[in-house]
Length: 270
Image 1 (tube, one colour):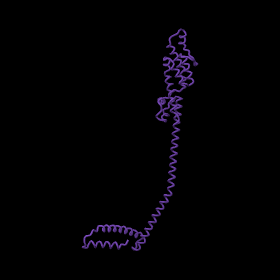
Image 2 (cartoon, one colour):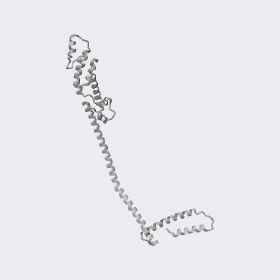
Image 3 (tube, one colour):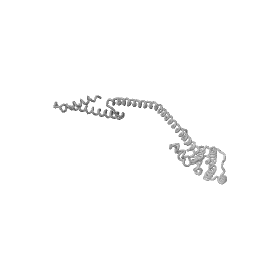
Image 4 (cartoon, helix red, strand yellow):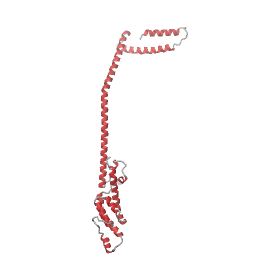
């Protein structure tokens, strides 16, 4: 910048202000002057800094360091820009690779989680099935499957249902007591009736008929074969006196049958 032109402009402005010439609005010129002064101060500060860095020198010599410093600054900026570009070029594929690896890891994690959940559900189903067979409680396993289990299955989860072996082993003695109660309630019919009531003989093989002995023979045969539904159907044909004796067994058998039926639908693979 030509400092002499600036100084001349400032002197001319001062002279105009000091003269008796008509009043003129110099606010615009003053603003330009102030702006120029600020720019000059900034340039002066930079020149001083460069001269200090070069160990001093004349103003003419300072011109060269200023230009050189500017070129060096531009070179540094270009180098920095090149470095940033190189770094960007280097990082871009790395970031893409990391993003790909992360996506694959997330997919793998989701797959593993899904497989683990499926295995946990299948294990819980198997535990419930085994518990229904053994008579063991199955509340914990059932809770893994959710809170939407049917009532027939959920209501016995804490205690378990009667195992079939237990129902089978208990039925003969109960059947004998039920037959005795039915005969005792029947009207007496001579000596034969007295003998029957005293010794309470019963049929050990299923036979036809609707008398309590025949009904119980078929029910017991169904129980031995594991057909609890058929046994319960036969028991419905007994007189009330016999049913009262069998009521606890009937309740246990009904609970087991209902739980098994509910489990058949509820424990299907999801």
